[in-house]
Image (cartoon, rainbow, N blue to C red; front, side):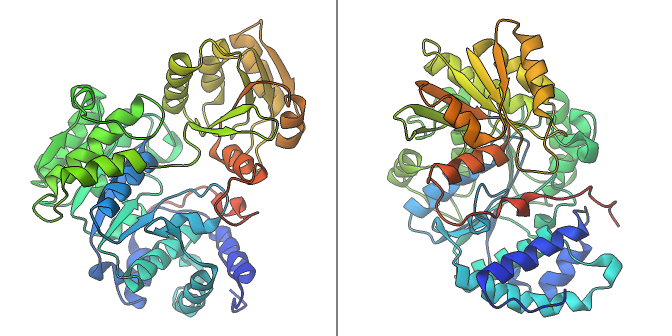
Length: 431
């Protein structure tokens, strides 16, 4: 790529440059790059997690339970909210800047062995970087979240101890398919022959696809539903009733893997009690003493979950929304779901080339709730300033916006100005 990164900013610049190769589906490049890097995945054990919503929370719960059980646990998730380093963690410690520099420098020469028209993408390189880091750190277990889809996602080069599919809902239809059955087929691509699979999918058509895929591959299937969530002995320290199903799903995985990874009841209780996950129904105190609820409700299912949580916990509290969304999301439907709850909304652009126009968002809110005052703000700081005297503010619509809020409020674990690494272009067709 023209230079050898020797500092952390240079490494981030190099990774940023890989966005020029867009995103694509297909495993050929990732398999090849991992082989050139020594096949670090062969030294590791994985729980592979796919699904439309709840992946991050389920991963966080699994990570905390197994860490409470004494294992050294790697965690690979995306996108990051503020710092690139959030994507690769060991025992919830972010990968260090020094390690990012080292791994980038080690992988960079390997990229020269690819033809220009088949150059690895940002996500493919980061996937192999994570594998190298987890192997170097001698992780006992890696909680391994898919990026987009599953079947042709770069993470699918591993053979896990268990495959997990949280749920199936509409998102990324332009790449995964325009029906729940097609989306389910892509997510079910992580199911491996003979490897247990656990799912909380409740959409009948999607569930049938997962059941058929598991049967075809002779993969033992466990299904978790609302009854399992209702029977939880203790609930996770994450807000929202939907977290009960995520917790029930995680506990079903733990049960399936007990013969290989024994976990006692005390570790389960501790894991559920101590789990944390930023940017998802995260309640924080703002600089003016008001309460802020941060939630990346970026699709219809996520907005429905947010609305349910607000109705249950804050319905008597006047609500002001700060909302921004990406243009390729179903933002008009999200506005329709949230508008009845808001007393006032400030719409802002998201720091992305794919941002939806705030004026369009404001019109959608007004159409859904004619009594709602919808104001266009220049950016997030302007919106925060305009509602500094409000008691309760909900910042939502995009994880990009939530990440910016965490950064501006000083709540980010590390890093700054690296949200642009989440950007990508249209995926190439699978080869």
